[in-house]
Each structure stands twice: as C-alpha cells, then as structure tokens.
Length: 77
Image (cartoon, rainbow, N blue to C red; front, side, top):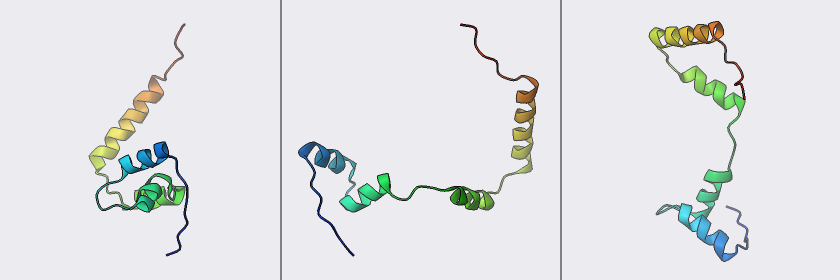
C-alpha cells in the first residue's frame, strides 16, 4: 500500500483522534468521512434489492394522492 506523510496541527489531530474507534486506523477514519460518495447508480442498485410489501406501496400511493389534493401553500407573513 502506498502511503503519504501529512502534517496536522494539534487541534486537527485531536479532532481526528476523537473520531477514531479502537482498532481503526487514521486512514480508515479519513476514508469513512471523505471517501467515495454514493452515486445515482448506487441508489438504483439499492432500490433493486428492496422488497416492499403491497400494503406499504398502497400507503405511499395514498399519501401522494392526499398531498396532490391538498398542496402546501406559502405562509402568510
């Protein structure tokens, strides 16, 4: 594994150390906070794995229908 040396001031080091769990490396802490971002493709794959019951789908559809019948309006200020 390739590695790099970075310089942190004491405050930054302490902030990083507070996030570190036992057995976790500083690299793992940094990657968990700043690593790869989820994409639309990730969402699509997750949605494909979901199993939603007909009752849940019916409840979602009813909620959408209710909102279209009574749309939100701006507050009078």
